[in-house]
Length: 118
Length: 345
Image (cartoon, each protein chain N blue to C red):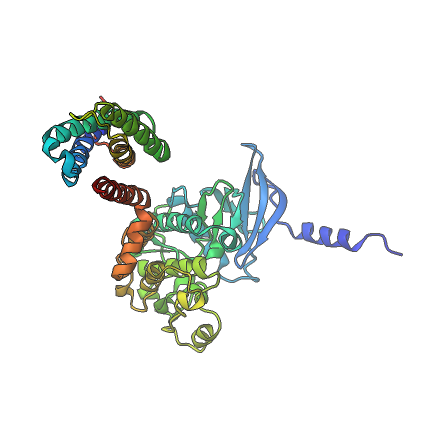
């Protein structure tokens, strides 16, 4: 499995779990499905981007920082969309999103890709 | 009236003792060192224009059996082409009948001199490379029988070379390591049954007890364990009371556990040393590769097979190995919990 594919899968899975944590916030529980779908999509995009970065750059600190930045930016874009009441959740989405990006950044740097160069 | 100073006289006397290399292609430059079997000189190969280390055996009167050992060492080294073993370029006889062989000149320092200033991971990586060289020799059917820090050179770029193969022995009658003339590397007088060869402080019990027939690969594994002991504690395994017991003939005397000398030594490393230095050959690591793999596991933060660790120790090792991801995940969990609690207020 290549690093981008690994990043895609890990980002997607962590995105699902990240979205599911909205269940513990009663005021947004009714929108859980939409949140999980959005979070998963964000995770997939972030994972793929971070995976491609890991393929080009071999550095654990840079990988983590890049993941953190990508997670923060994508979460910022998602957080820019308000809920039906017009309320924004910047803090609740951006901070955990950045950490999820850092986890994917770490994992893609550590992951030893099994792909063989053609 | 004095014509020559003392230092000049000493120099002249030393030069007068230098071997006559008249009919060889070598030109002596200086003396590098003096050992039990002979003297090592820095020499120039006048044909190829390179500097080599030239080992010249002591005279038969000064050291009986030295010539045999020297041939043995040259033949063993000629068969062992490995980055961790110093290569031999040439061997022959001098006009006065003494044996010599030319080998690569190694710029470096002995491990026993260098190790005290090296950080632990560096010492362990050097140890892994020693194990690799010994494992290679074992695979070629050769046992070193005198492994100790003094016989390991560390080069300026961290390269590690196992030296002094003078008492090495070919196993299985030398079938896997034939000499250049086709004759096997048979046991020399030095390896005769009953003879004790090597350095007592690093020697396996079966070797110290003079059981030449049982001195095989496990004896080298024991000596490797003893080198690891030195690298961890800064002293040979048999010093003080343990050395006295050995000197009195108790070959099965056990060394003081490393952690008793330095409690900061990791229990896993102590377990590796004690297993490698087990009294019974069957209780040691089966091969030098197995020993090297254990040290590699320790360096990688994996579980060391020789050591049974408790839950706390396992958790500590896990955290040390996965510090970054554990901290990120913990930060995520804590952050999520705080945000959920904050959102409910």
